[in-house]
Image 1 (tube, rainbow, N blue to C red):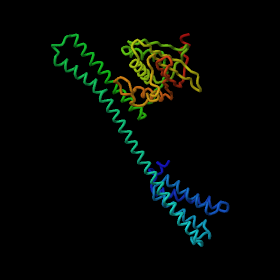
Image 2: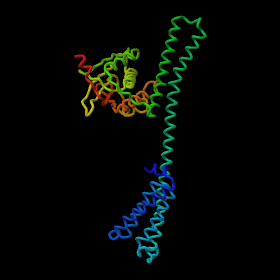
Image 3: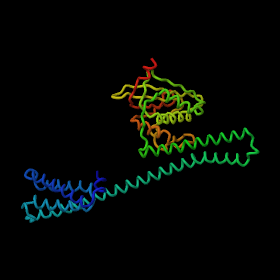
Image 4: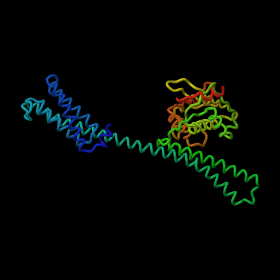
Length: 364
């Protein structure tokens, strides 16, 4: 509110607003003056000036201090309805009131300005920190595949007559893998940019969750080939109204993460089911592994942008899980990470959705 009034309202309107506030408070105090006395009215007006100082620029604040002092003198200090003051004590009180109101208003305004500057400095510091994290991450994650592509391409071009067909295939394979890795990093950056700008909005349509999961697993055939993948579906699983493409990216990132951070031949289990909710039912998908799990003190941070586990292997920008969270929240859903007592991690996705059991009726 104070940000809006101080920055969006012209000085002329601010003068008018503070004058109306002081007058309205004075009218209320005058209506109860027989019960509260003129000294209590002074405290009320002083508090009013303090509140005004939290919301408006310095000159309107000083106007409020002067106007409240004059009103207090004219309407509240005996004799009423005159600026003449018969008591020396009341005169000193009036002068002190004006001084205190002015100083209080100025100090409150200055504190607000200091807080604003501190907030701006904090934003700059966070921006610099984010830039450094991004630069450090991308300097490796983008440069490595690019170097691989350039190096392999040079070998193919310069020594094409000396390289055996087997080595040519290896170099082409390296170029392909590096290109896919580079494409993945750029895609993550673009997706995060779209999320933060609010550009990504789910295009919901009826989705067969079994098709969604199996198509994602087929996409990750090479990634998952050294792991055992189990898929479990609840009986009579309905169609859900979700964005197929976004949810496929969610599952892709989670399964890729599970494959990257669990030992070879470990098991990755995917379970999809429906949970009764109100007014919508909820799609619940869990992705479970039997690896080492996550450090307990880092579980709350894994969905943060650019965050990578302290002892994680090199590779990745730390955007995969933050994109997962963003896509799920775009569906008004939630994701939770927990460790299993027996070892390993469980990602639980919970998304409220419209459902249709038409596909089950057809199967029957």
